[in-house]
Image (cartoon, rainbow, N blue to C red; front, side, top):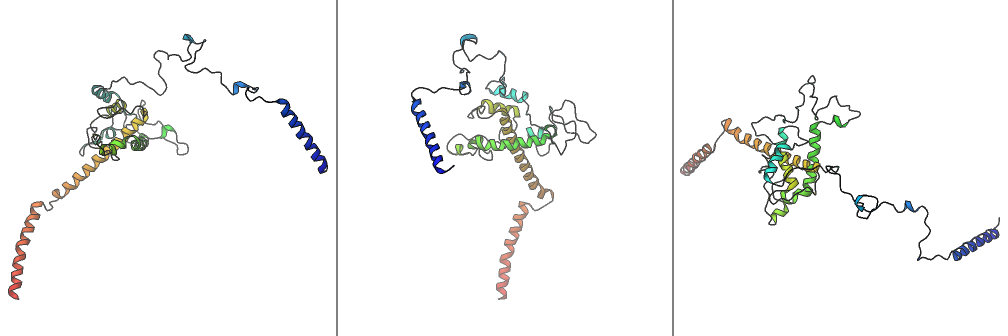
Length: 293
């Protein structure tokens, strides 16, 4: 086939396409013919559209009495200080390992296991309790780690890391990066919140802090719309880590200041007497030098 025949064939095809385009005479004001229109437009009704099939003639139906939406468990508390205290007694931190996490101990106190949590076995022969959710029944496999093989402390550490990120986004503007209440909002005239590491939140229980994050208290507004339940517990665990670090730093400073006195080191009075003696000796040395000269 030479080029002449190819040109003839192409010319014939072009003429056919042009003839079909003129013959169709498309009217752009009218919709085209649709093939399988159900794949383009869903027959489902809108939420607020009328519906002759459902009761009441409405598409959106009221939920069944007593039903709870997934991920939206109710809290049967009021936005009052009394219910905040009651929440502290009833709500339990799902990540708590011991009392040392929920409330930092003093310098001379020993951390004890929480009442609702079982202490980890001291030896390999001790079997974990059957109703404990924080312990595992079998040794974890290194090749295929499962959810049960994650220790409670590892879960708590992961929660603290998540809480640090959330704190830096939603809380740092008022509480400051270290929780001291020196955030940019407080520096511009807003009443500064009490310091989290050493303030009045230290003796509060985790459930009470959860109530405050959920409903707000005082000048602090509710954070329920910004933070889900798990995120609120993460923030509480991060705040507890700040409080535990502050308590350890205070105990360390107290031990350092008490160490010189216990070892019989020099005191302030002995230092002053030494300085006075040296000041009396120096003029005498100068007179002796003058007499020799």
